Amino acid sequence: MDAKELIASGKAVLGIEFGSTRIKAVLVDEENTPIAQGNHEWENRYENNVWTYSKDDIWKGLQDCYSELVKDVKDKYGVELTGLGAIGFSGMMHGYMAFDKDGELLVPFRTWRNTITGPASEKLTEVFNYHIPQRWSIAHLYQAILNGEDHVKDITFFTTLAGYVHWKLTGEKVLGVGEASGMFPIDINTKDYNQKMIGQFDELVADKGYPWKLADILPKVLLAGDAAGKLTEEGAKLLDVSGKLKAGVPFCPPEGDAGTGMVATNAIKERTGNVSAGTSVFAMIVLEKDLSKVYPEIDLVTTPTGSLVGMVHCNNCTSDLNAWVNLFDEFADTFGMKIDKNDLYGKLYNKALEGDPDCGGLLAYNYFSGEHVTGFDEGRLLFARTANSKFNLANFMRVHLFTSLGALKTGCDIMLKQEGVKVDRITGHGGLFKTKGVGQSILAAALDTPVSVMETAGEGGAWGIAVLASYMLGKEEGETLDSFLVDKVFGGEIGTSMDPAEKDVKGFDEFIKRYTDGLAIERAAVDALPE
Image (cartoon, rainbow, N blue to C red):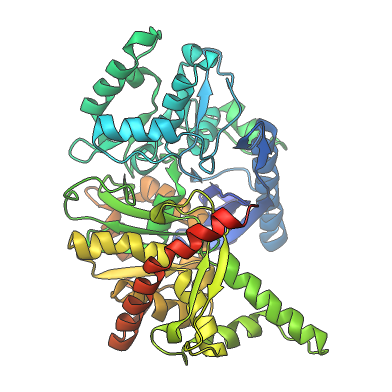
C-alpha cells in the first residue's frame, strides 16, 4: 500500500514520546518509514522545590501533539486519521507518579531531574548492594517514606510518565522491561523485578505498617513484542478530542527514552551501544555479563528485551559549546557579518580537527550543573591554560568538544578499562554529531572504539517506540527484536563508521588526565563563585 491507502485502511503505526522539552508523534508505514508527525513544545516547572509537569500539561500536550499529527496527515494525504494498526508510548525514564484507590494523583509528578532523594539513594544502594540512582522511582518512594509524607499510606499504584499515559488510555498497569528497570532493579534471568530486593525493601519499611507490599503497587513487567492492552473508548476520547479515532487499537509495552534510543540506533545486541549527545549525554552498552562490583558512576538498566545494559549518564554536554559558538556569532554580527548558524558550527567544529591531539595543554569544564560521575552537586563553567599552552582557535574548539565528553569518558573507562567490557560498535546520535565526522571522530577517540552515525538516528525515540509497536504487531513466530531490526528496519545498514585514530586516542587520554587532576580547580570555583 502507499501511505494514503495505509492510513485510510487504519494500518499505519503510531509512536509518541514525551521528551523533556518536546512531545513528538511519528506515524510509520509497513517499512517503518516515517510518513507523518506532530509536535508539542513544553517545559517542566519548578514548584515547591520540585521539578514537575502538571496533569494538564501532560494531557493538553498529548492532545495538541496528536492533533498536529492529524493535521499533518490531512495536509499531506487528504485523508482523516480514524484508525491505527498499533500504538506505542515512550517517555522520560524514572521519576514518581503515585496514585490512590480512585486513580487520583497523590502528589505532583516528580521528574527524573529532581535531586531530592540522596539519603534514599544511598540507603537502598547499601541494602541492595546495587546502585540506585537518585532519579529512580524506588528512590523517590523511599525518600517519601523517610520524609514521613502522609500520602504514602494511600498508594495503590506508582509508575512513570509513560506508564501513566499508557494506563489511562488502555486501563493496563504495565511497563516495558527497559522502562521498569529505571523504577526498580530487574533480574535479567527472570526478566522481572528482582524478588530478593523486593523482599529486602518490604523488610526495610515493615515497621511503618503500610497496608501495601511493594509488589502490589509496581506495574507489571512486559517484554518487547508482548501485547500490552488496547485503546479503550475512554482512552480514544482522551487522545483524540475530535472523537474520530476508533477504540480497539493494540498497544505495545510503554518504554523509556533510553530503550527507544537503543532501538533507533539498532543497539540492543550484546557488545553494541549508543551515545546520545545533546544538552546532556549518556552512553548505553549492552553487557555480556554482570559487572564485578557496584559503581556509583554506572547505572544498570536493560534493553526492551531484558538484556543487561551499563549506562553512564552525565548532566552536561553541548550547552557550553553552544554558548561559545553564540559568542563567535555575536562577534561576527558586531562586524556586520551575517553567518548562517549551521555554517558557523560546521566551520568551528571542523577547525577543532586541526588542533593538537591533547588540545595543546588547554583545560575546560562544561559544568552548567552538577555532575555526579565526577562528584559535583553544583557546577561552574571554566576555561584555563598555562602560559606555555598552545592557545589558538583549533585547540580552543577542540578542548570544548573534548570536555563535552569528559565526564562520559570518566564513567565509560570504568566499564571499558577496569571491567574489560568489549564493544564492537557504538552508534552516536544527537546534536553533537550533526557536523559530519567531527563529534564522531572525537567520541571514537574518547572511547577507543569504532563509532557509527546513522541517518535514522535523527528520528529519535518517537520513531523507536513506533518500531517497537510495529514489532509487536507484525513479528513472525520466533522472530527476535534483534533480527526484526536488522532484517526489516535497518536492512543491514549500520551507518557511516569511523575508527579511532591512534594519535587522537593518546591525545584524549592525556587530556583526561589533565581533566581529572584539574577537578580541584572546578571544586574551588564552586566554593568561590556562588550562584
